[in-house]
Image (cartoon, rainbow, N blue to C red; front, side):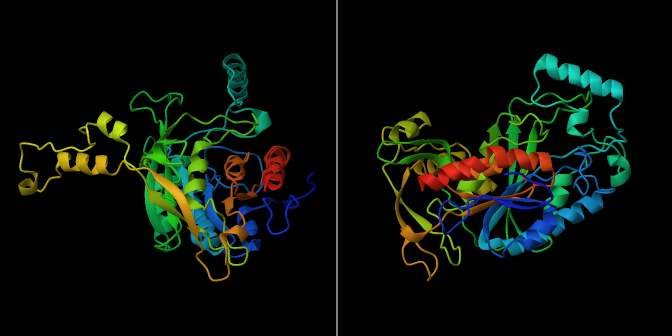
Length: 402
């Protein structure tokens, strides 16, 4: 499968009711407007950060003249995304902040020096390299109206602007990158995190709380152990697979979004309403409770010396008791349809995951590896071709397995 001009490239479905891989090679807003309404169950994506990279493609996002224009574009994106998302759907937005600077394009000497360091240190991508067509950020101070060295607070500005249009902002997640390189700054801590925001078009949406858990492990009987997922996700920094895309996130991030935001049991072929998993609680993990300070029964009865209630403060002993009590495993035991047109969960089809800035298809791989269908949108033809060559075959394999 090859491309000759911008348009839609679709892998023919390996079974008749649903396509597992679709890739739109065109502008993101035009692609969203052409997609069917309510056809996506969750979207996990990271848009091009403002004034950070120039991909050398006409119509690219991230090179807007001002910060206000960049935020307005993302608000417009979410406006179109609301129509495409299923009423039970969710959207996960990954974004990293930057500092205001005058900036400038890289010089020839800097390009050569970075290319040498790439070879010497075996970096996954060529920073500032001509072949990749992108340079470091330039002009963020002028375009934002802030003084040099000021934090732009772009993740927060973007999330609040989207919230003001009627979206529910449900969670703020910190992606902690445990092995990222140190920054050059000498007068502040080096950043090692990015932000992920969970949005929903309404107050009620699909969220599988037991699909991903902290310190998760599964017993031979199918019991899933672990505590409820927290808002700090710690992984290593991302590495590009294609060695041509300079901005990727760790595959664990979209994996979590896919499992939490879509049903593993699929959805209705007609209205696409998700099949709801039903879990049953199991026996407490006494060994884990004891490791966390519980007694032989996994309980905790300690008391502090202070009167926390009178002080209006939270009692840490009570918090510990609740945490130990919550360390109960769960197991999938049944399924329930959420619409009248699907009479049996056996007739369900895979849920659909969208990445409107799909790059090298990290979200697509996470979706297909976990039995979901994938829709990607990518403007850069080289990155789109890499997905067609390397991600699309996974859809064929999944279709054969089904």
